[in-house]
Image 1 (cartoon, one colour):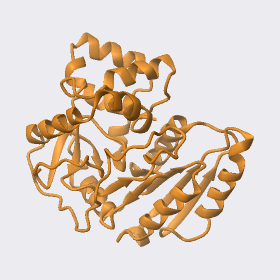
Image 2: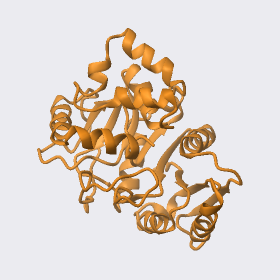
Image 3: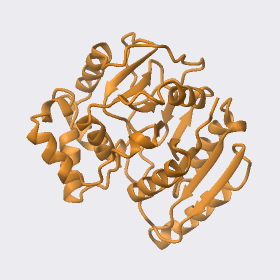
Length: 296
């Protein structure tokens, strides 16, 4: 199998970073994968010690086959770090798997990502592979497609990332021009438009809302597993941009998720299940949590 490089973005959370790396190291393909770690610089003096500790941790072990570390002197912020880092590695390798420092991966995460990347490499309709899925109780196909993208443990190709549009205002205008706002918001169940407007106003610096909008406007699809291969541990209220919640808690799959030959089309079954889950979350929680956690 032609393995994709793994990219990990870290900042000032040593405990989360160590857990993320420990889980990644135990992935069955870790010993054969190259890992690029982008460490952002401290935003202020109070963060310097934590950034230093994170940098000690990322150098502690040989987490994957090869570990390449890039440390920034200045603080770029998560959005700029991800946009620049993903672009650099994608341009070099043509594809990549992306993690952040609060994502615990299943032993089979890298397998699903790489198999998905290889299986759909030449399928222009598919823009990315995703590892996390919400704690949906309804039965879902082993893997399925949804229109757009997601951001908790994902992978893409150069052809997919080339569609990323940094200009949030341009994206919003196009969504409005095509009368797609309701669909963009999962039929009104998820406040994506509000998040995009906040990004435009500078009230958040979300790269992920722009990634979703870019894929959505190009009618591209993302492949999901029916069981989550990722758990986000950064939603316990300790993170800079998070509030405590258990709404996104999942049990990580302890078995492989097979990549099957399925119709490359938006899954109505999964779409309806996502809608029901979003509606089950109180609106005040959506507004307060999702724009600070999922799209920072």
